[in-house]
Length: 185
Image 1 (tube, rainbow, N blue to C red):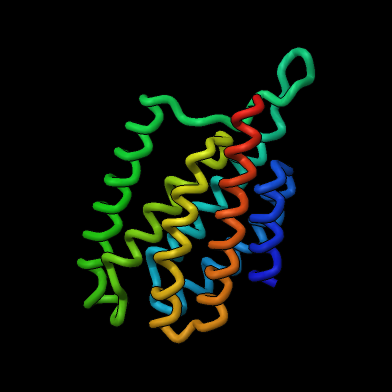
Image 2: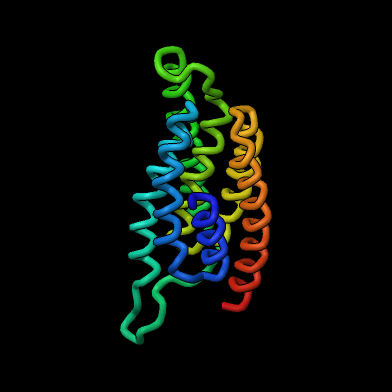
């Protein structure tokens, strides 16, 4: 159920369809539990964050202006937005890495702080940009997925690792489609 709802969610995001968010909620709640039980606390936190941001994104994507047009359009980030996302990523990575490294011995034996923090910080950034329909969200999703493939594989979660292979392909397709849509808006 988690894998199918996740794939469907990414498919709908590629299509700029608001169903990305309700399907994403199903996925993120299940993966919060899976990640926590697999001693991937960073991924558990990121899935909890996805849950909150899915509600926010759902709200943002439904907003209309006075002409009943979508308030948000697919677009590239401004220079200021790029700087903000890089600061957000670096701050998220540092906070996650040091938290995971500290908690590893006490609670999460077998955790891989640098990889878990990298995948999670990229995901935090990608999800934030997705709620705002920024093309660059797909760059962050690609980094998240490529990092998550070996991360889950080393934890013995082979099917989840395969799921991230599929998500990588969908993220690439999403980036190509949004790039084209941004050029025509």
